[in-house]
Image 1: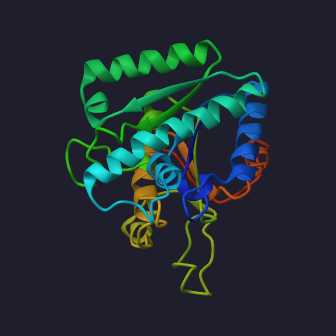
Image 2: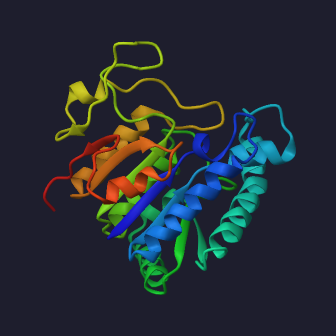
Length: 260
């Protein structure tokens, strides 16, 4: 089974930007075990800017573009060092792939990205993908940017023809209303069609360190399901839930992919 797993900043880091060591260690352990069981895994990892904020001791996520890019340059080193160290403990090799929108939009460059990912998976490596935030303009709506890693993960899943896309977030899934403000909100276990009603359920943005929200996750679901790929939104606070998922149990919200 080929799985693309996207992990958000809120899963990787504490509110101040410092690494959530216990959770990241558990995530790497679970993903290593999935690989040992025969799965091919691609990890799309946010967190470069957030970890840069923590590493530099900044008071919060920079508002200016040079500040975001500089924080990302620092944080990406920290992020890959951490993944390399933790996955090596389980005898798995990671590979870093940093992408810009041009790498996806240009057919020739996109083909090279596909070939590189296929070769890495064929060699048994675990690709770790992120947008190249140190050079990309990451404001949503600008045509030269991917925008956020929810969409990137869906694009990567489509590129490698994944069997499943999993978004690990700070929420259990898609609710009938924002559970942070509405105590009567209930989890929607399965979505078979992304209708205007489903799209209307998207709330605001994500955490203070991240850039995603439910709207970006629904955008990712549209990309994935149109390519025939099932997508699941699940809570990243418990990475071991991935075991239950591969055992066929229901967790989070599953968006059912259409026929390819």
